[in-house]
Image (cartoon, rainbow, N blue to C red):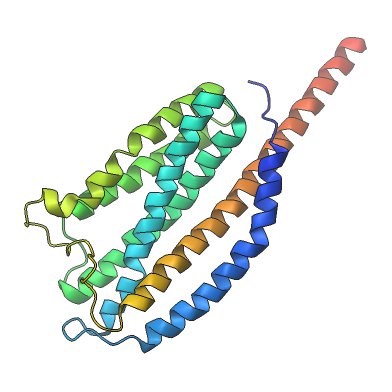
Length: 244
């Protein structure tokens, strides 16, 4: 397969968003930390409950990453533009990062509230499967670098993987009330003084996702340019050998 030429428009957009997303992240993170410190402690769980302002937002960012993986993959299959494949690959990498953080923070909360690090209830099990599914996506891409056939297979894989997200989100309802994991948050789920830090937690996490996605897209563009240059050098070397 020929080396992939990066789309300058995608690179320009990523470069323009780098600084704004960094400043947005810094501002939101400062506000978020200030409100988390001032937020009241839960009467039952104590200070460990404040992980609420981080754990669910990490899940939302992971869902967004995997949804963008599917969108990028679908557009790549439709338009055949490598820029969309790079978006899908970048979104999967950032999504796996946030999913990993979600899986790491969950047991900390579980230990403080349930008295144990893990439970094989439906929500936690599907979350682990979701993480493995997108980890496999990244491994597939890393082992088949430069293969258009692998890129098309990964696009279909990424679209199919999207089905796991609603399954994960509604696992509590599907378990028929037998899950240890608490219910999904609703409008009146949070106590007094907890709404603002939670909202800022969501916004901060999404800003972090946006900044990391932009940087990852830039890295993928750089890799594509280096691959193109290496291919051009190999072609020149081949021509040189035939000429002599």
